[in-house]
Length: 565
Image (cartoon, rainbow, N blue to C red; front, top):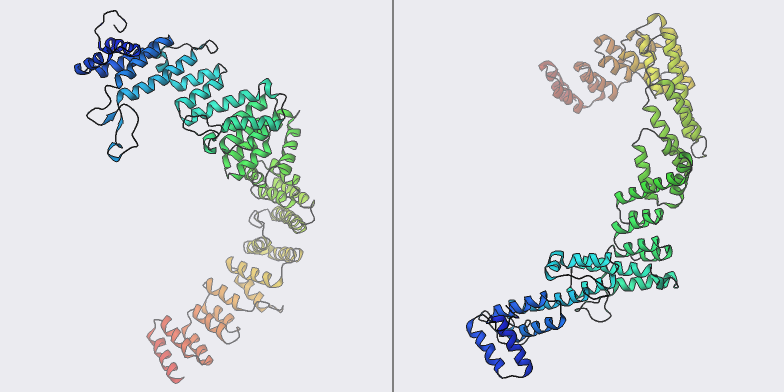
């Protein structure tokens, strides 16, 4: 209907009026005003604009757009304050005015036509209709141009249409990658090629950008890594390294470094970003690389451990050690510790695993291995001696269990104190073998250099716990020098709920004073406690007994004695 001869459609009449205006005919103005009076001018403008987008001939496109532009001069301002052009910057009353719908549609259609004409060029060969353009969307067209190896045109279209920044970054990265792998860059040094690629990535060619302006760094996140990967695949490893130095996105930089084989550098970047997941990814990928590169598993792990210790950051090594510590097999962890010459840590790892082992023979074998590892270093002499003594202790416990035919005589323990106590307590169940058991306990104490004072405490507690009160009495009456006094004997008798005569027998042998007073109070021998407090001439202790005792007679005695003092 638009191009039909004699058509009376508003769009056809507007096109004829525009043609007459271009020829200089005065009747063009009257024809345009006649369309305005019918109220169909806006529809005519939209029809001409839409028809221009559907045309393939450039001259016809210009003719239709000229007609639409001519018609907008007669719809300059509507009642809602909309104007044909952009927002006015003049006087304040006009500052609120906005473009009309026809004007905005005209600008968008003009951009669309220009892009489609560029795509239809014989050098490009991407011929699209307006409907196809709308269905694919500008973002899809950019992707197709890049797939067709037309990144320069894709970059220009992105800037012209002011597409999303992520799409523009993708187009710039594709263009930079194409330059890096092109023949024109082969005669350049790595520095020159990298600088040219960086200029492409940072170039701002949009309409709104000033000449020579650059893209902010946050808009190029991931772009440098993408170009670096392309450079590495093209055999330009130096260019890839220079480009990755400009990458600001850790999530993109670390995988790129891993792809080009810079595992230690990738781990350093991940550690600097404090990203545990990326750090562990670096460790896993490097371990895979070692296994693929090596001829056998042993050689792969040797290379992995050596490189991990010498080139990876300490935080990455510690993370790997934490991972190994969560596994039952400590072989790899010990190998890594030995590679780092941390003999104390390696022996401790084996010792910890030995303590978690239930089988005694396996435990002894593991502790022997730990002792051997401790012996490799000069700073682990104490740990080696401790491990050797623990092995001897386990052997002694096994010998005692075999000799007396009972597990209770020496349960598995890492404490010599617990072992001696178990032997003495077991004597309470085997009175006929008590003499031999006491001799074994004495021998263990001498062998492991248990102090005499601790040995007496062990005996007192073991006798009281096993009910060997006669042996406790004999120990208290022995002629051997008592290094702990009789207070522990009295407390053991009190805790064992022995008769008061037995308790008194020990307390009376305690030197007069505060200790004897405390023991009488502990045994609830209130009258004795009052007498001791009177001897000490301490009224506060007398009243303390009164507060503890519920007997009226004792309370009255305390009041009388306190008044006398």
